[in-house]
View 1: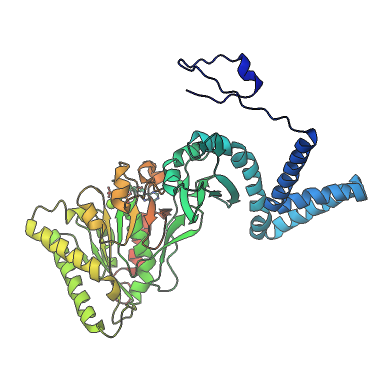
View 2: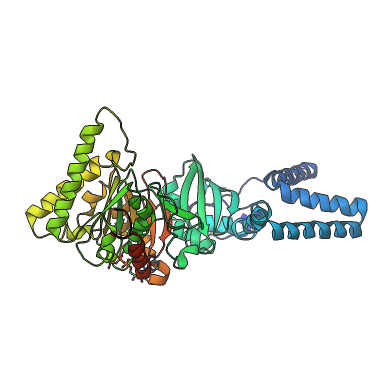
Amino acid sequence: MWRRLPGEETAGLVSTSPGTPVVFRPTVVPTPAFITIIILTWRLIWGALITIYLHPIAASLVAATATATVVLGWKVTLFGAGAVASALALWANLAFPSFLTWVGWPLLAFWRWLWIYRRHWLAVVAVSGLGRSLKGRDFTPHLVGVRCDGQVDRVTVKMLKGQSDKEWCDRSPNLAHGFGATSCRVSVEKAGRLVLTFPRRDPLAVPLPARPLPEWPSVGPVEIGQCEDGTPYKLKVHGTHILIAGATGAGKGSWLWSVIRGLLPAARAGLVQLWAMDPKLMELSFGRSLFHRYADAPEDCAYLLEEAVKVMQERAARYAGVRRNHVPTIADPFILLLVDELAFLTAYQADKGLKQRITAALATLTTQGRAVGVGVMAALQDPRKDVVSIRNLFPDKVALRLDESEQVDMVLGDGARDRGALADLISPDPAIGAGVGYVWLETSPDPVRVRAAYVSDNDIRHMVLRYGRGTGEAL
Ligand SMILES: Nc1ncnc2c1ncn2[C@@H]1O[C@H](COP(=O)(O)OP(=O)(O)OP(=O)(O)O)[C@@H](O)[C@H]1O
Ligand SMILES: [Mg+2]
């Protein structure tokens, strides 16, 4: 092995690598002192300019303080600083959200850039294998900036030329541990740039109570829970089909019930019809008087699905050449078919004929239903059984807690786990993990982590009392 060793020291070195007969001794060119001084001064000026460019506010604060101290004296400067601090405190008291947006989060971001990310950047990137060393030169991805909000840090990174986001996705556990976070999500901002999302605290670790019943009938996206950044999560139900997969106790019920709850006023207004199927008899049967149609026996479920196909075909014939989209009206309401434990009707169904009828009806509904206002929302426990064929029929998928890491891609699609959908790592403790899941919508580039609100038995009883059949106009 030939190694390049520094200058004069080579003379005194003995190579420890066996079979190394030659040690190279680089040529040392004596540089005049003034050139070295020019280079060092230029580096200093360039470094200062870059710092001012990257941190204009911090740089102007330092410059203003220094100038004021020199020109006005330290007492006046101290008084001025006290006045600014009092003004900020008043601002925080009067309008905390705007104070956070303009002062709090940028200050926190600056601190975390300095103390966490800048300080550990070189080491973490090198150890996780994301830097490169070529012909004796080190290439390190560039840390562009840090943004903070109440829950997460978003770190923008410029990748090395020729690197792919896949490499970063593979190293996300290294990055998370390296920067002291529990996880790291990688998303592409634009060509060559990534955003790494590190949660600082998990707002989804506490159960959410059921969302308030909407005041106005709406078929638009239904608020069913909360996103990781603390914002409400709204699930689009009209114009799509949704598949929810999760191990037993993962909280599939809270997703189904939160959607039902959000649509009840629209159902009362006649804009939505909820058709429920509960072959396991343990979930939707609890509120059966809320549903326009209900079935639990597999034969009845097959019949209901075929009825939905008939409605769909009748609408398609009527709409043909007239319109391309469905608008919910009392004459043509949005029909949402809710199925708990879909595998009871497909994979576990012993009666072959019945299974075929159900699968055919489901496939017809999911391929042709959304343009005419017939949607399917199905929950499923075991993603291994038949799921890959079924999955492709549903544009939107949700992965709640799963038993194995391979199941994540089976439910959400290839590459979902690499993109941060760590559904297999969701806590099995219901207080922490039930109802938590990753959603990968047809329209979004990355999976989103969400927790559905918990609709308790009491909430369902209350919904039945207020919206059940016989408590008002027809549902
Ligand atoms: N969103 C939630 N927040 C907090 N706890 C929840 C939530 N959803 C469910 N739970 C708790 O987890 C338990 C299991 O939930 P659920 O019955 O919905 O699971 P599941 O996925 O339907 O399971 P199975 O497949 O066995 O029916 C509930 O009894 C409840 O105590
Ligand atoms: Mg269930």
